[in-house]
Length: 218
Image (cartoon, rainbow, N blue to C red; front, top):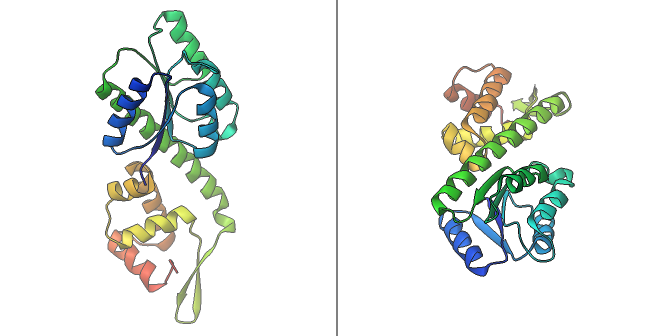
């Protein structure tokens, strides 16, 4: 599934040029014409990143980001300000409101694309690391049963470890698994290492054989 981005600007031409570029780059794009409309879309669609102007009717960009940051679910949402207001004090106000990056207008779409990729990658790493820590805390209470004949084998796998194991049985590389699950290759490697440890295997072929033999993914 493509990542969802929200583009907020009261200028129709700007919205269209940015959204067209991002859609051609493989993202799913939502657009809003002002901060109030954008806030409702954040709450409804939970985008992975927001690009917003500052000077807009009904609710400006500063107010929009402050409202977004009040929701625990969106405190880590990457936000990029695009605006013609590029004085130092205005950039400071942008960062203080909770923006991650401030790009002055006019801007190059390629630069915006690079900034978006960087922020999304960082965001995905942070979220996957947080999820990994949470899942590790639940392992003791989340046993997965394997079977050898009629004998039960108690192996404690998290939901994410099971997802990684399924893709390993399909022969996918760390990079391919990361792309499917929106994880960094480093985080995928941590899950693979955990699977090696739990199954007492030393390579992928042994791990896949173990998983299939004991039907751990059923």
